[in-house]
Length: 174
Image (cartoon, rainbow, N blue to C red; front, side, top):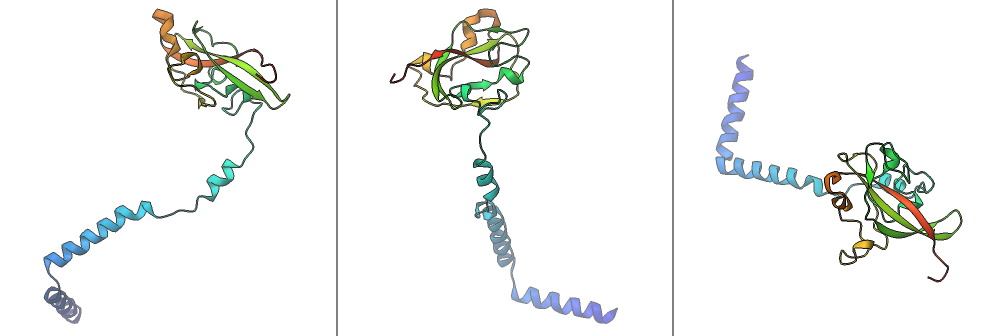
């Protein structure tokens, strides 16, 4: 046991003679700085690239990639107890809407779609979808999805979810 004690004592004395508190604090600072910079190193993000190349589900009303949701912003009523075109029970549609023009890949036609907020309950919290294709600035409110359209309902001003109602086919060349 004495030889082990003597060895540790000798190595501790040698270390103390060659280093100072400043050098120890400097080394600790370098270690902490290196640890803070570690998240900035490049990572292999191949998994994300593969997920991005997957085909969007343009025919599923509970998917944000559904073709009718090209200008929607909010929770999808199809995931919140309603459907693509009807509000869930206990909510009422806002009388004011915004519109978008969406391309249906099934028939290769464009449709004018009205987006209604369903109001009266707290936010659904499921299937959040924010797509801003061809969105116009807020000075064109009928083409902007960033407004709380439930404010027009007075007492039922709580936003719950959004629906998309087809208004008609857009004529070719329009």
